[in-house]
Length: 162
Image (cartoon, rainbow, N blue to C red; front, side, top):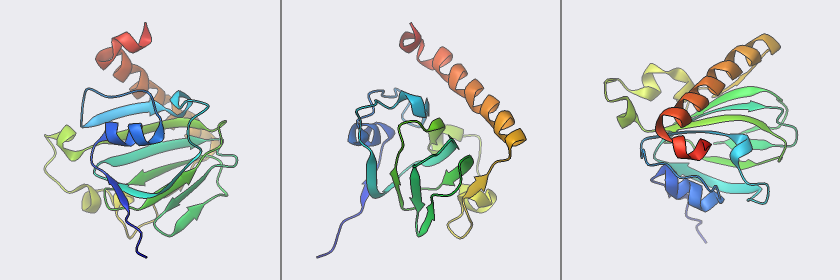
């Protein structure tokens, strides 16, 4: 019996499937903190693909597991990973994991006319898409993600913060 791989076309469709309560009014972009996931939400996702790109900063992964295509990551505590629309991805999470995720479609960057996979090798299927972070890089990258998260919610979703 052949198993059909789920492909999420829209960011909100993915959120609905995961039990994530937030939704975006901007169909091509969303940023969230891993702390935003409800504690009673799902603990894992079977392999899937999506029609949007994905950048995640994972801090204190603990017992979290991610599998990208055939690469499983269970040993790194602090890392950054990148997924294109063609990656097959699954995960199991530890509720204590920290970090941020950015979802975007190329149309969000309408000024960019290149190809994300070929121009940015960390999105390429053939490359390793996980970057382990040193302590100094963790601080630097965390600040950038925190700023993006705060700026996004202050500019686009002010009612969420009230």
